[in-house]
Image (cartoon, rainbow, N blue to C red; front, side):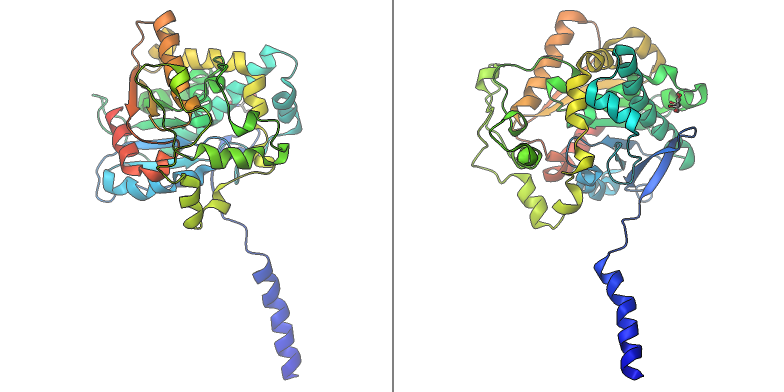
Amino acid sequence: MRFSTCFFSLLLVVPSLALPSPRAFKTIVVNSTTNVELSYIDSGAPAGAATYPTIFAIHGIIFSNLVFQKLMDSASSLGVRVVGINRRPFPGSTPFTDAELNVIYTGGSGTAERQAELDARGHELGTFIANFITQFNLPRLSADGKTGGAVLLGWSLGAPFALAAVSAAGSLPPATLATLSANLRSIIVYEPAPLAIGLPTPSQNWNPLVDSTIPADLQLEAFGQWVTAYFDNNIANRNLDDLAWVVTSPSHTPTLYTIAAAGKLDAMQELGADAQTDLPFIFNFASELLGSYRNALFDANTAATFPKLKRSVLCGTKTAAFGVNGFWAIQDDQAANVPQASIAYKMMDGTNHLAIWDNPTTIINTVKSLV
Ligand SMILES: *[C@@H]1O[C@H](CO)[C@@H](O)[C@H](O)[C@H]1NC(C)=O
């Protein structure tokens, strides 16, 4: 009897050890018709602060919003709140429907269908920010534009989605748009590849994602290792040939190893189905992404919709070459087409693509200087 009771309780215990309970996600519904929701992590209000800005950070390819953990750890002491949003279909956010996947993977029936899909991603993020402001009663942006409010930080492949949030905002429901336009004070475009905003890829480009000698099922993992390294770019002459397109720097440990040593890599890195939609999306949507980026940063009507919005482009000197390339490409695109637009360009000395992990204080202070 004693033995069998013991055995029975073991049966109860063992399954719960073998199957850890699923991660609990905090989510916000961003479309009440479709019930699409986005998951997020939130540093919370900085202790004792009457007002503060809230930075809404959008992650890139492979790495989920957990890549912003170090920013969150530093947020309170630096007087900001950081909210890391998981894009669809990353963990806790609604997976794409078959119809949405079809448009992403094939480019759909034409530009109207692609534009609607891109606008939907923008609406989801814009609605998230507006709903978050309302639900948590965030400090509103002051009349002088100097305190409170929201900052949209689009990092890496998160940048085109941040840009879509601004570009597509004009067709949001009026109440959502009103909250967003009254409170969004800054959009920061942080190290997208040119392709991610529809600009051309130069002949020098190399990374593990475009190397067909790497088995297809290892390309994402190889890219994650490579992109988190440091690169000894020579930026003095603003020449693409002087960037370190292939070889990583021997003088600094790639951040992926630091993240792994801290035991954080497995939870953060998505190499399965969640990671598969980003590349087809940027390849198939190039012309819509170009229009969306230009509309968000340079268009006069968008500027009128967001009268308090500052627009910036940010880059570290030791990031992967595509990041420096993207930074220069935006500068050149602006100079050629809209020299009158007011954009701040900020180059950070010595930081890599994972400065959000390696240099969180630098990043938050730089963001604060751009709001
Ligand atoms: C919610 O989803 C529906 C169906 O896709 C769409 O028609 C509508 O525009 C979406 N709402 C917003 C605010 O984007």
